[in-house]
Each structure stands twice: as structure tokens, then as C-alpha cells.
Amino acid sequence: MNKVVKDAYEAIRDIGDNATIMVGGFGLCGIPENLLIALSESRVRGLTCISNNAGVDGFGLGKLLNTRQVRKMISSYVGENKEFERQLMAGELEVELIPQGTLAERCRAGGAGIPAFFVPAGYGTEVAEGKEVREFNGKMHLLETALTADFALIKAWKGDTKGNLIFRATANNFNQAMGMAGRITIAEVEELVPAGSLDPNCIHLPGIFVQRIFQGSNYEKKIEFRTVRST
Amino acid sequence: MALDKNGIAKRIAKELKDGYYVNLGIGIPTLVANYIPSGMEVILQSENGLLGIGPFPPDDEVDADLINAGKQTVTAVTGASFFDSSLSFAMIRGGHVNLTLLGAFEVSEKGDIASWKVPEKLVKGMGGAMDLVASAKRIIVAMQHTNKEGESKLLRQCTLPLTGVGCVKRIVTDLAVVDVTENGFKLVERAPGISVEEIIKATEAPLLVEGDIPEMDLS
Image (tube, rainbow over all chains, first blue to last red):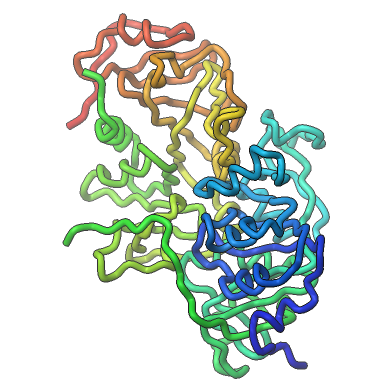
């Protein structure tokens, strides 16, 4: 078993046009920077991207929007990106907005073999259009279906050669659930270590979910809103 | 006088109880963290995977991996925990969060809330707001009583796309504290110096007024 690849370019070699990809991260926190750069430099077109957000202008998923490689975004919140808004208003980009918790659970369900489930979020709103409604315990719920992807692109803090991953602070966010839901899950990590170096008690995402792993480089870790207190 | 944002936050802080797990939305709700009464332990949940939000970091401790739902850099308090998004919303959907505070464009007398979309003007998405309003045990809305055009945001029916139906229990505005009851909006408190008449005038929907309406305690 060899899951380790050299770099992001090797990792994405077989992502083709019109693929569906999941991209981990919340805002710019915990995004797979190396994979997104490699993808933006590739000639892949027509991507459907499942990601909580759409990056910012020129960074993260914003790179793929600038290069017009994205056909459809499936997200919960897409503010902070002018090019995104422009493409959306001009009808150049298809967007499906999903409540954040439902999005996370649809990814988790996709990886967990649960084809559909009921949640209360979105009942009585436009999110409910076309969905089966059922009452449980006196409360209305919507039937939501699982999401999977051809490729899940995720980022972790530490990973080992067997693909076991540990996330750090709030950089986990969607990476864990999306990592479960990719038919091929590619993980980039800040620190790649030999199997046996990580405490098995502390693994967030077990290696069974991860098909490819590599050590990322040159992390920018951009901050959207740098807020500090005076000391 | 109408309250400023900090005044609204100060009044909302009175709704907190020791031991509460609270989710604070973006905007005025975020300010509530500054007015948690001393000696009271309230644990703040952030939907992006943090239980135990601390204050903003000092400049030399900013950590790009540690942000709140508004994507601002924060710290984690002693005893905090980190987790993934699906577990975060399991906390929310499972009813484990005691109180949700959020902003809104409009609230109806039935407790419907509109907070995420202005057609043809603003489509940023609902983020976690729909999950929160559908599942929180208690939902309090913090907002201005009227919009920039001076129109009431407390309506018989919302005009904008909804975030959730029949979920808001209490609204704290710059003018008043209003509860959503089976019979519609009920005036609970006035901002200092604001008359009942002024509040009725700023409220499009009918407002139940029973007896003397006290001023808010902002001490």
C-alpha cells in the first residue's frame, strides 16, 4: 500500500473535466492550498465544487473562479468574493445554497453510507422546495440526500503514510466529513510522518478514508479578518 | 433615546444564565460576549467547530487556524474543545445549545425570521442560520427596530425569503424588548426614554401592551 504522492500536481493528475470535487475549509481556514493552486494551473474545466465557501478574490477557491474552471458551486455562504458575485449575477455560474449543518451532514452521510436523512433546517423556506416533508415528534422535517464526490480535497495538520489524519483547532471544519465522502480523498498535510508516529488515540480521520496523501508546502494561511485585542 | 448596538448587546446579556451554552451570530450578537456578567460562566459555541470562544488574541498570538464563524481570529478559553462541522451541527440540531442569538432583516408576529437574502440585491447564503433557528431551544433576535428607510422590521408577515418559521421567541431592538406570543407581538420593555407610543409607531404589526411597560435594566 502506497498512499504517499510527491506533490499536489501528482495528486490531482486524474481529475478531469466536469468532475465533482469537495473542498474542505471554512472561509480560508483549513483549505487545501497546494491542491487548489495545482488545480488552478491545470486545464480542468466544468467543475462542480462542494465547499462551504468560495474563497476570496484570487485565493483559495477564488483562484478557480478567476480561471473560470467552476461550473457549479454547492455552498452555504458565498460572501466576501466579488468575482463570484459577478459570475453569479451574470448567470455564468450555477449556485446551490444549502444550510451549513445540512451540508456537513450530507457529506458525512455520503461517507457513512446513509443515502438520506431528515432535518428540520430549512422547513418553510425556499430550501424546502421539491423536498419531502415529514413530521417527527410534532416538528416538521425535510428529507435531505447524501453527497459524495469524485474527489475530496482536504487539508490536515498532521498525517502519516497510512493516511491517518489529525486536524488542528478550527481548521478541521468540513475536512473531516468531506474526507469521508470522496471516492478518492486526497489529503495535504503540514507535516507528513511515518506510520506509528501519531498516537492512534488522537486520529480524527482514520486512513481508510484517505487514498492519497502528501506533504504540502509554502502555506500562506491567509486570514480574512485579523482581529486582535490591545494588551 | 434609542439604544446603540452596545446597548442592545448589554440588554441581551441579561438573558444569559450560568452554565448556558450559547451560539452568537454575526453582528450585534457578537458584542454580547463583552457583557457577560462577572462570576457567570457562559460557554460560547462557534459553528465552525469551537466550544469555548475566548476574546480576540493579542497581536503576537494570532493563529490562522483559530477563527470564529465570522472568520475573525479568536482564542479558545480554558476547557475549550475543537470538532468538525458535522459534530458542531449535531450540537445545534440536537438541541444541546441553550440559546441562539442572531440578527435579522425582518421578524413576523408568528415568529418567522428573514435574515439571509434580499432578492436581486444580496445573495450571500444562509450559512448556519437555518440550522440554528430550526433547532435552538430559545432564539432571541437582536436588530434595529426599523431599517435604514425607517420602515418597521417587526411585521405581520415577512416580505423577504425566510430563514425559519415560527421560531423566534424574543426580539431585542434599539427601542424595545418584544416577545412573540400566540396572540402576536407583546411589548415587554422600553428602551430608556422611549415611549410606548413611539414603539407602536415603529412597529408595523399590532403590538399587545398590557399595563405599565418598564424601562430596560441596563445596569
